Length: 331
Image 1 (cartoon, rainbow, N blue to C red):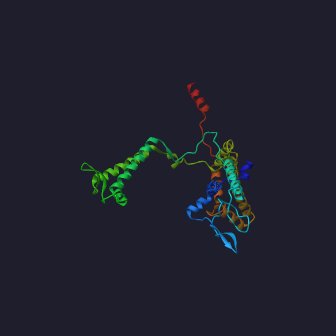
Image 2: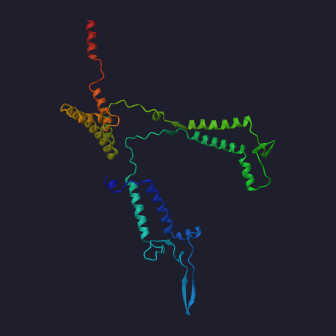
Image 3: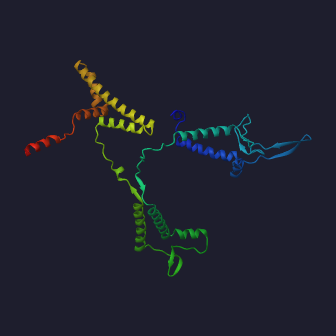
């Protein structure tokens, strides 16, 4: 639990940055950074030549570019701001490795916890038959190819490649020969495409299963107090596998209970203020409770619902009395 407070949960942006840094580090530490810069044209190799100056040969190099023997991007260590260096471990390597190590530990600390109770998150769409999914993909491919062929796209591709004479129409068997022939839409062509796409929809319906219980969930008819007690029970069960998750649910239920008591307190303050003749305070408290935009309006509705249902229990007919009546009638 302490590690979760030290290492924050990695975000999508952080994971994307760690991936980019890992790729950069693998290329840079292997000495291929100069090759990448030269081939892409971002940098040029620094050219040097010997120049005779006052009878002495001096070596002069062009400004900019990648110096000879430098293969790796490094952090500048002086005022020359030279970013190319030798193939050795430097400051930038330590920084990248430290960040990647922090990200790796964060992923391990915040890894998904196995559900020991065997409860899995329900999915709206589930895979029912992989065979029908494959058939659906094949039928969709055939439908798309048939549509593209009838629209003359294959003939346009053939003409763009310059194989020979220009052609038009659809590709297929025509009068005993295979090739491109002029094409005109007919009723059978439309029926063919409708059949292919309809079979694709049918195969998808056989291969996938939609959980209608998620689309039409069972309404929660419990009152506010029952929801609070139900939340506490859920928190106790959740703490067996995820302590922090269960604690969060318990805190939420306790917060709802405190809000309910707060609405009751505001009602008592309004009544006491009205008894004392302070109509303004009583009106403000009552407006805060009953107005649709009041801060405690939602809590007041929950309190009213709970008070209305207080003491209303389902009546059950006692079995013992009915049994005694049957015995008396028999006697």
